Image (cartoon, rainbow, N blue to C red; front, side, top):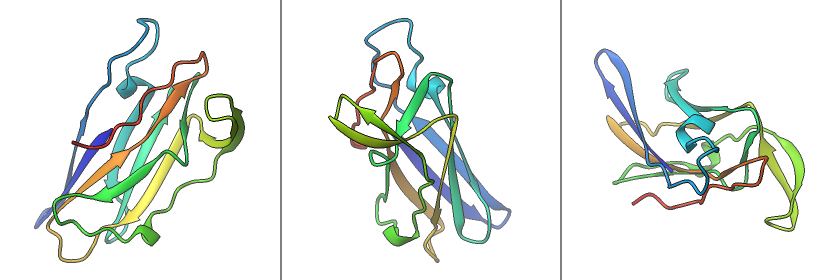
Length: 139
């Protein structure tokens, strides 16, 4: 789970991230912040880009990744662009799921007139060795 804050000012954009880490079941697995390293940038005009560098042996679920506005921030859901991925049968869900490995970049439009836009990002990922991190809502 990640809180994403976009601050716009005279000098450009400052992006701040905070990542809340769930407890791990096993010591030999990476912390979520290491398995799924996020980075944020403003690309063109009002377009924001959230990228995940995904560690070898780990993957994120496409359909378990969501972004929403916080504290009055508007987000046009149709502006959110999720990348394609790989289809893999997942025994945890009992169906084929689209997953991202190595890298995933989401793009979305920052609403006009929002100097301090705040967004919530929820995602769920797993280790190939069987540990899946829980999907939790932003508090």
